[in-house]
Image 1 (tube, rainbow, N blue to C red):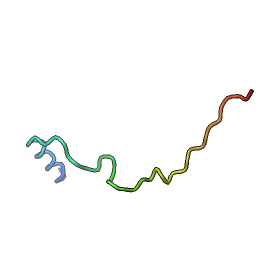
Image 2: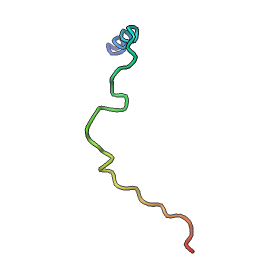
Image 3: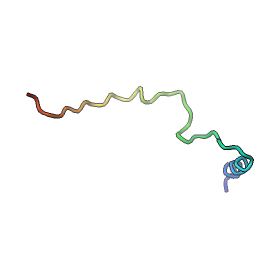
Image 4: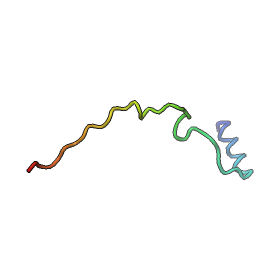
Length: 48
């Protein structure tokens, strides 16, 4: 068992309900979605 899992088990047993971690990825101030190109518009239907 990894040391992190052992520490988490100890903390859980002591009543700690929340741990900080990289669940969604490493914290960063970068905003990669601002550098992404705009999606192309999809034109559907018929013109009258």
